[in-house]
Amino acid sequence: HDLMAIHPYNPLEDPYSLYPHSLRNIDELCASIVRSHRETSQYRVEELQALRWKLFSREEIQAYQSKSVDEMWQHCAIRLTEAVQYVVEFAKHIPGFRMLSQNDQIALLKTGSMEVVLVRMSRFFNTENNTVFFDGKFAGTEVFKSLACGDLITAVFDFAHGMCALKLTEQQIALFSALVLINADRPCLEDKGRVQRVQRSVEFGLTHILHRDNQESLMHKLYQRVAVLRSLCSLHMEKLRWFSQRYPLTAHSLFPPLYKELFA
Ligand code: CLR
Image (cartoon, helix red, strand yellow):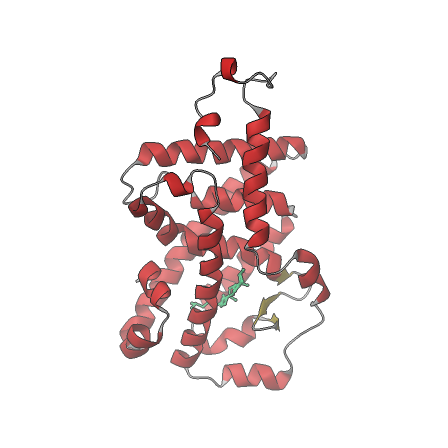
């Protein structure tokens, strides 16, 4: 996919379009983001729906709760890192992402991958009993007790709850995830202008599908969610610093390399 086919737009070169933007290209852009989301989302929504009855037993919950702080942190860091790896795959197939410099790709992933994991969490969340699909079953906040960061866990669960309330379609989640990732205001970007052009095309794609779905009012709500994401990720970093100070050995030698690379 060639982004220049969308930005800037030259009507003389697009005999198919009756509109100020090429719908053909914007449809292609949306389709490839949606495809990339689908191929990297681990579970389909229907599959997760079918697994909802699988809850951790009292004994299993107790086993998680009796893990030591560093044992549970290590366990969660591994799970989070797996999720981040899928987000990296997702990013690679967003049209235009691979055309950014390596530095800028890494800068966007460093700040955005955790945010996308949290957006994706809403697909793995059951609002009826406030549980998230984790380690093969649905887990409530009590499962994460031994992490000793209850405020972060509560905030993360609240966020998932709020995202679920928006009742987004898979296509909307895909485009929103791409928009969260491709953000020209992230620090340490070499070529802000180029990121901005990719960002505009993704924004345009999201606007396009919201318009098609007759849900333009969602745009405002989604931008509000972005602000909450920022605060959640700084809380995550704060907890990570606290943990690394208390358990330097675990943080240094037992955390997955990618987790350290992205968040340390
Ligand atoms: C998010 C969507 C991914 C699959 C996935 C994997 C790991 C899950 C994550 C989801 C949601 C958040 C999660 C995480 C493992 C641990 C973490 C449940 C479902 C909780 C919130 C604990 C965070 C602890 C850090 C402070 C280390 O596609």
